[in-house]
Amino acid sequence: MSSTDFTVFASADFNPSEYANAILAGEPYPAVTDPKSQSAGPGKEPPAKEDISEAISKLIHGIDDVTKQIKQLVLQHHEDLLSQAANSNELSGSLTSVRASITELDKSLEKSV
Image 1 (cartoon, rainbow, N blue to C red):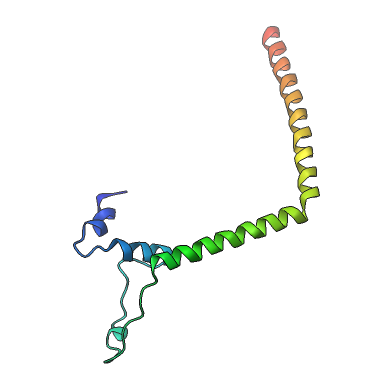
Image 2 (cartoon, rainbow, N blue to C red; image 1 turned 30 degrees about the vertical axis):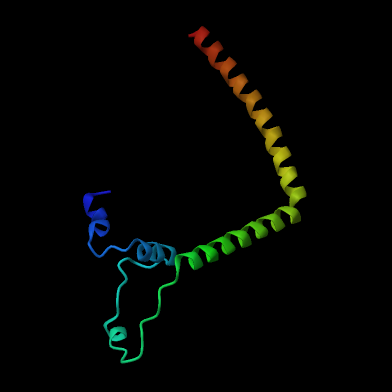
C-alpha cells in the first residue's frame, strides 16, 4: 500500500463509525452524495446510516444461515463424503508406494551412470 491509501484516515473529517458502516455495507467511503438528494426539500432528511450493531447482527445471522446450510448438506451427503475420504486415503497410500518406487529407480539410474 502506498501512503496515499491512508489519506482517508488522516482526514479531519474521518469518522470511524461511518467508515465501518460503509465497509460493512459495501459502499465507498466517504459516501458519494447525490446533489439531487441534498435538495430534497424542507422536512425531508437524508436516509440514516445503518447502525454498526445492526450490520454486525445481519452478518452474524448470515453466517449462522450458511452454517446451517453446510450442516444440512453434510448430513444429506455424509455417505458420499465418507466414501471420498476413504478413496482419498487409499490413493494417498498408492501414491506413497509409487513415490518410493520412483526414488528406487532414480537411485539405480544414478549407480548405472
